[in-house]
Structure formats: C-alpha cells, structure tokens
Image (cartoon, rainbow, N blue to C red; front, side, top):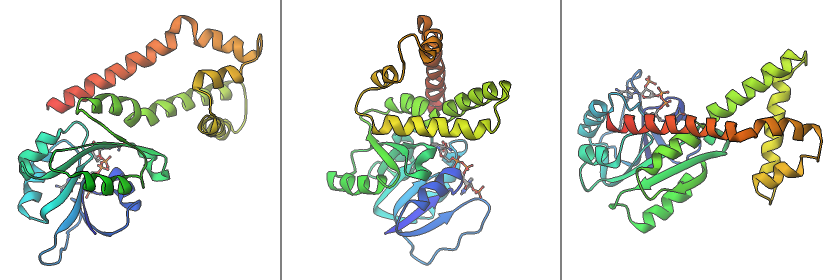
Length: 247
Ligand SMILES: NC(=O)c1ccc[n+]([C@@H]2O[C@H](COP(=O)([O-])OP(=O)(O)OC[C@H]3O[C@@H](n4cnc5c(N)ncnc54)[C@H](OP(=O)(O)O)[C@@H]3O)[C@@H](O)[C@H]2O)c1
C-alpha cells in the first residue's frame, strides 16, 4: 500500500511510525522526489490548519492520488466539507483526531468518514487505525469539539496535575519528586486499566474510613468545586475548537 504524508511534524511522524507500507513524505523544509506516476492509496494530511487551504490546493494539483485514494485529515477544526471543496465531492475523506499517546499504542483515535467510503473500506481502515490505540467512530462533526477538548488536550491536563504534585512534594523536601510523581500516575493508570469496577468504586476501595486519603478527598470534592473547574476548562476548550472550525 502506498501511504503518503503531507506534513511530517510531531503528529505526522508519530502516526507514520505505527504504519506498515511504502511511506512517502512531503514536508516544507525538504525537496521531495517522487517516481513518475506515483499515486498514493492513503494520504495522511498532517499539516497545520493555518494556511492549509493554499497548501492543499497546491498538493491537489500534483495529483499524487487516484479515484479511490482515501484522505485522512488530522487537522484540528477543519471539517469534511473543507476537504471535499479541495479534492472534490466524490473524494473519500476521513476527519480524525488523534492524541499524542498514540506513540505508545495508548492513544485515542477518533474519526468520522464521509459517504464516499464504503463499509468494507471502513473495516480495513479500522484495522489500520487500531495500530494507534483505542479507536472511536464519531457520528457527527460536532462531536469533535468535545473529543478534542477532553482527549486531544487531555495529556496537557494530566501534565499540569503532575506539575502540581511535584511542586507539593518538593515543598516537603521529598527527593526525586518528578520520578515519584511519574510512578504515581503510571501505577494508578495501570490499576484503573485492570480494574473491573468504575472509577468511583476504585477510589472508594483505596479510601479507608476516617483515614488520611479521606481527609484530603473531603476537601477536593467539597461542593464539587474541582469538578466544576474541570468542566469550565473543558468548555473553554470546546468554545475554542468551535471558533477554529469557523476560521
Ligand atoms: N500535536 C498534537 O497533539 C495534535 C493532536 C491532534 C491533531 N493535531 C493536528 O496535527 C496537525 C499537525 O500538527 P503537528 O503538531 O504535527 O505540527 P508540526 O509539528 O508543526 O508539523 C507540521 C508539518 O507540516 C509541514 N508543512 C508546513 N508547511 C508545509 C507545506 N507548504 N508543504 C508541505 N508540508 C508543510 C511541516 O514541514 P517541516 O517539517 O518541513 O517544517 C511539518 O512537517 C495539525 O493540523 C494539528 O491540528 C495535532
């Protein structure tokens, strides 16, 4: 299978590493050299959304594709109609939102396909997407806003929590704080991954009555302040995602 990457930055290179096939790359900083009549079966569009229209129009003129080529966009905020305008109404387009943990096969890959893609093509594509981690088929374009705000931006929220934990540990003079915080998050994630109970039950199972954990949780959960703060933050990211889709 001929796989072409338009854009090979942070995300493009992570996705490419998880794929089998003849991979070719177009980027800004290096001259590309394509065999005559080269045609890709899959094209991953991995450039930035800003200025994408011009880059894609130029790419479209080079005709590195055939009538059954599938275009997979990872551009935040750019809708399927945007790509249909460039590649034609009959083009097979997938809009997706991967997150960074894909590099460890622990990512989330949300996607939506247009009507030109057949059921059997979807089946084959899903096998490919499974190389990235957990896949989730979306039904509506508007679902991308919440998926982006929660799971796309999610790693940054977790890193912020880790930063806070590290600062607190350092303030108590604990050595190797960063290393310990990493283990705390990794260990807890592994516990959650293997648990059969839901998150609330899992939390209760590690919280003894009148114990130290309970004392801390009473403050963290008071009036749902923390939950409301996270909800407010995610809503801000959703609003930004919607705004970017309109630009
Ligand atoms: N990073 C994330 O967490 C994440 C998550 C989900 C979705 N996304 C989406 O992924 C896309 C790429 O993000 P990124 O973080 O990977 O960006 P990036 O690291 O800046 O990569 C952008 C790539 O586009 C190439 N490029 C720029 N102008 C070009 C042109 N005229 N022709 C050909 N290639 C060109 C760049 O080439 P050079 O290498 O030569 O500069 C670079 O390889 C964005 O649309 C973003 O919305 C990112």
